[in-house]
Length: 216
Image (cartoon, rainbow, N blue to C red; front, side, top):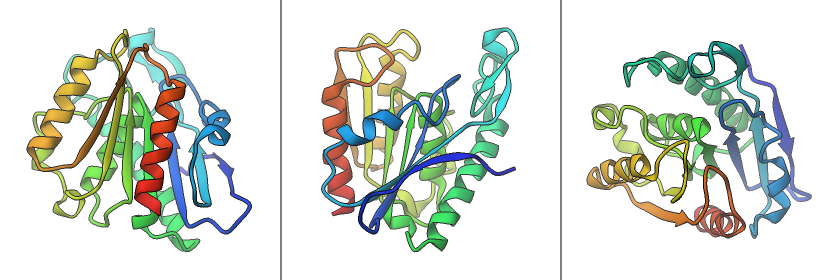
């Protein structure tokens, strides 16, 4: 299975790509409108894939776009779905490679569920990405993640941002993920904002600064 995507190309030849994954129940259009608001100084291609539709336990088994099922009891119970979605995103990465954009010019970004996939793939790659953007999210199975991370990924810049009033994913969960990563010598740029489970204008500016840092 391959993923349908929305692509936004810059007027000039892109020097990098951002693969941006949406959250539970949304689709690739979710973050499409903020692209013009991001203050990025180099031509970049934005790719917004649509997650497959699947039943989601936490929502009574209702079918919706989701990168993995949510609601089972074990913390590792979603691992198979996360791994499968990670493989699908890796296919998009390979496609970008074939279009002339190497991994070290690709940013993996994701919000909520999408951020789980972005960190899962970005931490385990054997070919380092330019950066990882993890928005209102967490690192899956943080107690065991260090057993699986790739040495190649250790110097990957990571941008983590969270709302202090997030009712969906409490900020404490994100802080725990950050501490696990910093303990493993990852360089994490941490931001928190006076918001809930969302993205705010200040955050968009900070994302632009991070993209410039990684791609210029």
